Length: 122
Image 1 (spheres, helix red, strand yellow):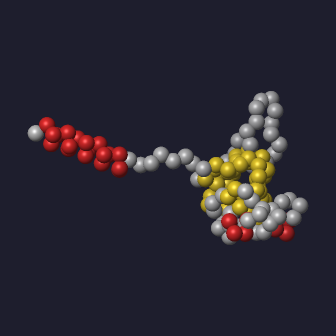
Image 2: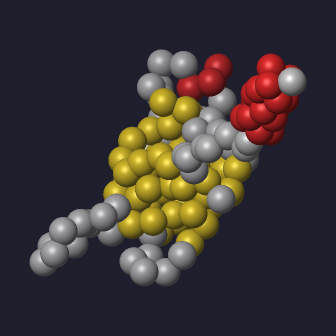
């Protein structure tokens, strides 16, 4: 009878482990750099990738009494993805300190360039 209770208790614990939701962190990207969205298009241009989706934009943190330079992001349809090549830029957005702003990265974007901003998936 004790063996049956032990087996039942073990089965209940294992079932609880299987049904427990996995803990996952919200991915963030930044605060500077070039991220490819389409891995094939970005080959040779980007060393990191960001999935398409909606992201919260935050100004890069800084320590008082200093403030980091104003941040912004670029969404690009082709490479190079930089302010100097406006023909490749789809959209530009600024990070506003202490105000939530958002960006929607499309699966058709080639890349995203970040300047003093962090993107967090929402």
